[in-house]
Length: 298
Image (cartoon, rainbow, N blue to C red; front, side, top):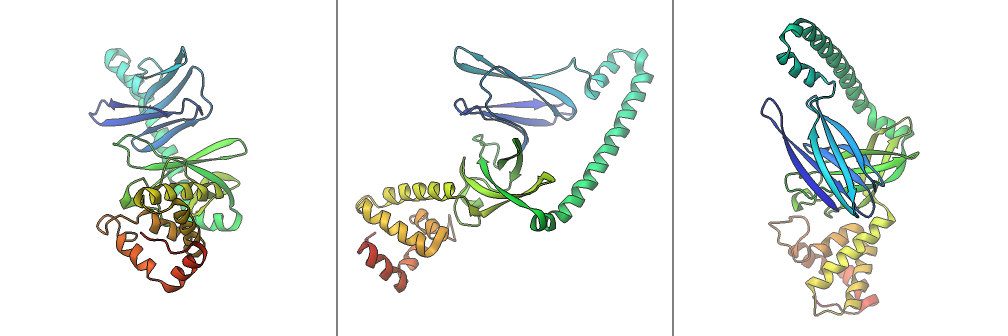
């Protein structure tokens, strides 16, 4: 995964953080600005160029492939006909001050009108989204994207409907303090069901309580790896059997208990050493495990 980041300093002194993640093998491309995904593209294997706006400033992100390697650039386009560039030229051409001011005012009025309409529409959609999803919502799998830059502490997800991709930010990240409702941390490539409205898939909601079977298998591999590392003296076959019985009896909640078996309560109050020990004291659970796996020592 190729990752780069740039800092754009606006005329008002405000810093904007732009990041790019590009999978050299998959070709998947994600561009984010100030913790918000602004661009997603797939199967980008050749030269490409994308335009984004930052505070009305047109910016160009270019990808160039040379001898099997990718090179990336981020440039400010000061020549394109944008409101910001027109304002800049106004300072250089005082004799066009009046006409440029008129155009700038008109552009501002149009922008405010568009913004007001879109904001009103967004609020109305948000108010009715739960009802729409419940009445007419359809489900599809969504993949998680977790930026690697330390300055970006959010995650996002994308899904495809009728050949078109949609994306949205999520409040969860890979920090222990931001675990999912099921108790597990979020990682790149995790997959959950998302419900969307057919007439407007941009209205959607991901459900972290509905991992796909693909995700269940990812959880299994992830937890078993941690279980083997935490208990090197215990036979792997016994640990695997223990895991399978725990998942059968406790579901993903049981997975989380195993994953955080060695974690202190100060780092994770919900799943930690103490909660794991208390789990082993449940007589019905221990009898079931001993019956199918024998006695497993930790």
